[in-house]
Image 1 (tube, helix red, strand yellow):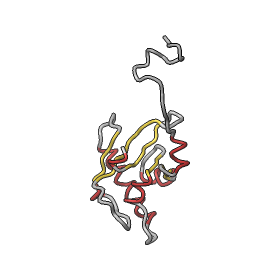
Image 2: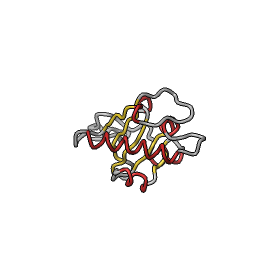
Image 3: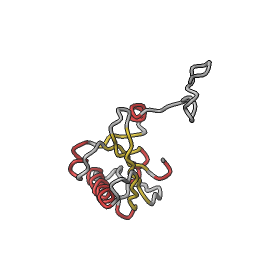
Image 4: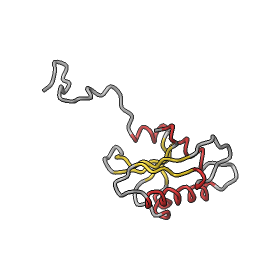
Length: 132
């Protein structure tokens, strides 16, 4: 049933007042796509994204070793996913298994969360705990 403004009265959450799509997050630089080849090499079979904050904490650096750090991050994530329950959607990767960038912010873990993207397909997003 809809009210006089056209809102679905059966929707327990009410009308959408704002939204932020995956496409917008990628365009804004909040999310960065991880190359599919890197994900596949680590044994991860779904699309991957990393937040700008997690990338800065664990991948970026001025020493030219970003590819090595990304491989280390993806290997740690793949291990966490394989060790978790099949129905788990959020995996915690301890920071001591991850490389640190040039200016660590003190993150003590990385979250890997499986969720649907704009298309409805699943994407694994790597983020810092305070970005959730």
